[in-house]
Image 1: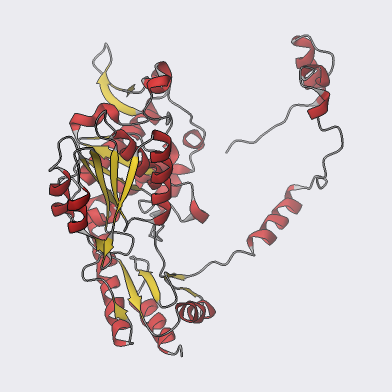
Image 2 (image 1 turned 90 degrees about the horizontal axis):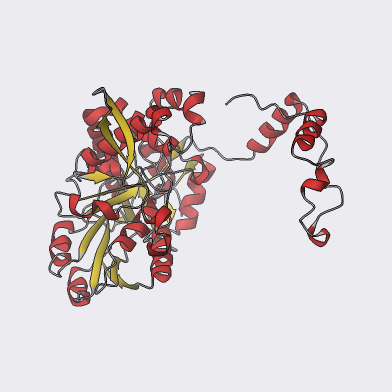
Length: 437
């Protein structure tokens, strides 16, 4: 980032004089005295750069950084090629803002266009927006998009990530939509219960695939059930890494593909910033929230990029808006674009294959150690059940410098493997949990 140089007292006084004020207090004269804070702020005195750096390092040292991680549940530790950080560290890219003026924003617009294109290739969909805030927001926005005059009920699987469910609940409350939860059966969406919940006013069916417990859903069958009702849309929330080897949402018959883009080149970063991707079939593209970048040609026939389908209800007919999202995660989207460009289809396939094979190897080893594997089919997350207390297992791993899976209850743990976990890491973790009494 560029060096920040504050203005001096003399410069402040000169600016005040230019706009007709004698002192700084005059600038805020319209604010009532009763709400002004007139005492000195209780802040430490200024520090030198060296002192500040030392203090920050001292604070950072309190963080526990694990070399080995077996936890996912919505945020995943993947390898990030060095080129991602190298491109993102470019000062002109870090400070770029909303590309309203296309003629001076071609670089940012092109990066978003490339991101959109890659998301469409990845999901099999026709059109993608420029991203939204995170995976939960993407799911909530997709549900809101499906609301119709006569279809006001959303059916959402109980097997989605709990935090995403909370976001969807908030969206449905704000949009006055009815939300019905499709029950869980053996760690998957209950297909028979879904059939009973389907009514003529059902606007959409949303599932997560693989779901929160790592299990692969009967996505194709669920899609057919969703489309049995006129104008009902099928929404799939997916982990983008799985698309390196698995069928795309479009191949499953989905109308919308949404999800969390964090696995595609973004670090865990204590929970953010992340990115929500949204893609859809062509017939519903005008309902996508936020902005979409399009490719065109100028009067000389040269390729150019512009904001397309952006100046809509959010700006000009706000009382009719179906969404209040007018922005996107441009820097995170750039990271995703660089990651996918660097990895390519073969690289992504390799990552997905490693995630799958290592998770299945670990599940087999834990099974031999006396843990019951609850999943019939899974990608890189799975649930174990054991007589051993989950808290004791996690503590034993923690004592050995390993972040174990996520405890679901007293005896069940949600484990995750990625390409970052070596066979030696897995063998060591299994050896540790074997010793837990």
